Amino acid sequence: MKRSAAMLMALTGTLLCVLSSAEAFTLDIFGNANMDDTIDENDAVFVQEIINGTNNPTELADANYDGEIDEKDIAQIELIIRGEEENLTIMQDIQPHTSPSATREPVTVSIPIKSIAALGGTYGPEMLCVLGEADKIVAIVEEGKKRGEYADYVKDTPAVGTTTEWDMERILEIKPDIVLAYAVYDYSSQRTVLSDAGIKLVQMNFHVPKTYSSEVKKLGWLLNKKERAEELIDFEEEHLNFINDRVKGLNKEQKPRVYAESYKDLQYGPTSSICCAVEPCGGINIFADLNSTSSIDPEKVISVNPQVILKMTSNLFIPQCGFYAINSTQMDAKVKEIENRTGWDHIDAVKDERVYIITSDAASIHPSIFNSYVAKWLHPDLFEDMDPVTVHKEWLQTFLGIEFKGVYAYPLPEES
Image (cartoon, rainbow, N blue to C red; front, side, top):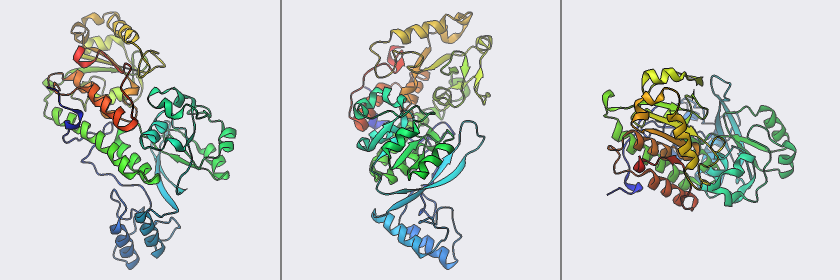
């Protein structure tokens, strides 16, 4: 008998690519003087001790962000605790793809936020929808109009360009309170134009598992959706914890060798969901030593002889995948194409029919779902009581109020 998704919980601990409940995070909002994961009376006490000289100043102690730590900061903390603040200053970790490191940049936002241009691809609009804030979305990007899971929420919302190319004139006409965008792009020039118009640019990444909890919680505080944010965080930790608890005791011999291929054929992308999922799901990534996007020599794959092949895709590469897919024909064709690569019939994964394909929509803002599919593929016996589709259905029903449909992964674990 399969367990319900609500029963799949345990403890987790992974690096970079997945969440870790054991790894505490700081709520990056000014007023969190003691640098924990919330703002409460302890922070007011902490600031008073800074004023008294018995505590050292911290990065977030200047609650009203005026350059001084004084009684006004205690007053701001009290307002935040009561939900009566007129503004919040948050710290953003911004790291464009071209930058070797992140910069921490504060931004002050007027509260309450009434309108948002959700320009962070599909992830920004989806996060706002699951937080119950769809009515605040006044603009999205073209990519955001194509995601079926939340299409009904944004069907009348105007598109104002693409993720990397915004129609600034249109945005200024709409004049949202904030623009919510990715933190993996450099929007310096757009920020200047927006700032001159009194519009704040807020940059967050909801697709990066390592910072997921921190970003979601921070947005929950900005939108006064703290409880809903905690529900999202709990869901992720619950299911990722369950996977980690099952695989953490495996020895090397019990872990299958895995070739994880990114979107493009014979390409490895170390930060892609598929490459990040291998080790946390109990596999050995045969190209783990590659730290940048790289072309893969097919002969090298043959020589290493993986026991499992995982392929990442999206509807840009396979139109019939994800929410709107009406059958698995195109996914099946891609699996067969991989199996038929020259010489690959000698690979164990092909001989044993362990070639799988999964869409990035399965990851989206819920990497626990993506990892559930991968874990089941890598260790079907170990996860006999886990049904990834059940986990996926629960998330869609709980947070978007919709029923599961489409083809996100093929072949489904129970069909393999």
